Length: 515
View (cartoon, rainbow, N blue to C red):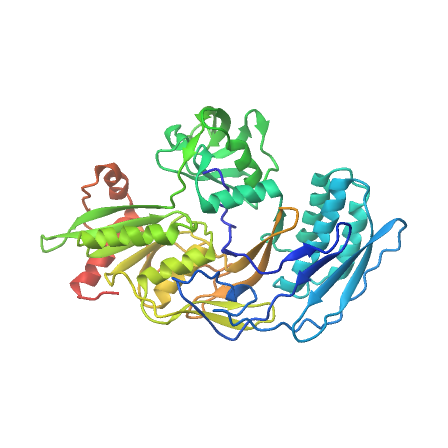
């Protein structure tokens, strides 16, 4: 899948801030965000968006906002100025209004982005997790950016000014993407696409565009592209400075066409250093299933064979929970006695999908995750009469590539006593983003809260340490397993972490303990 699945990718929700044009020229208004409640419950079967983490109460009991704070004037004294009236609506009190005068660009496209700038500024002002805006005057930032945008001649340059304004917040996850990029993002979470079947990501530190993984059987997989390969050119053009989303668009295309990708590989070149190669890859219809599964047959110490259900989840898309449910039901019908849930290199996705998956494995009304808002107030998000599909022992595999929604799920299962964690420390992304489609079709991602595990463990920049590390020493007493699914058996049999997980499950079963 060409849709970028960055390790910085985020659990996402649509927040209910709807900005609508009040007239065709300059006037914009927005509905105020609600205040967080002190507690929130979440039911997996509900059709409602989980909005408790991003400024709303749950189950229809939204609280009114106290939006009667004084908004400072931010007037720009320039000729040929247009007025933007920004009003907040509150059920309990009339909100103050702000009139911002700005030089209206004669370029139609730039003028439209000027309105998007005001829309972006307002949403950040009301929902961004840091109320100091990285210790700067956010109102003055609007003035400055509007003045810088006025003489520009293209929408792309104008969007660049919005990105520059957002960069001053010091949060790499708060960003704006163009309408075309937003459509690509939605495809990545919603359905199928036409492309080559790669997960790619731009590394924040180095700026390198690297391959996270290839979908099994996809054109990229058949071309021998490997995890960790660096993409340096697409169709002869350098990808230097491109975001993952933009590069993904270049890889996509109509079925039957091809794309030429130049790669630098670090693997298998110890003597001569990295090797460079060029591959021509056909584009096909790619089914974006985030889940694969098989049954592992493991010989116990007493000579009997046990069945372990292996489920690998690569991303938290809208279909993740339903596909997980179907896989577990099918394996339960085949008398599987234990499970391994593999979240390694799963960079996250939709937070709602992560919570839905958690409740497939959990009973009761316990806490799934705790969120902390911009005022430092904590909101526990709890299950509502959840019923697990199975109570068989469970091991969850994690590593340094398990991020965001993966860490929410791993924390929920571990802290509720449902699973043992095996692998390596997780990535450590404990911030929650909202995503809002703006009037021009672009989308604004805002960090609105951070989260803690059910046991109140910090995750952001810390990660989750597993119960058992995958080290060579841990393999000394582990017997190899056998899988009747020959298409997956070879790779699984060579995976030391799966062998360690199997051993942990065997210990649980020998004690008669079901997690």
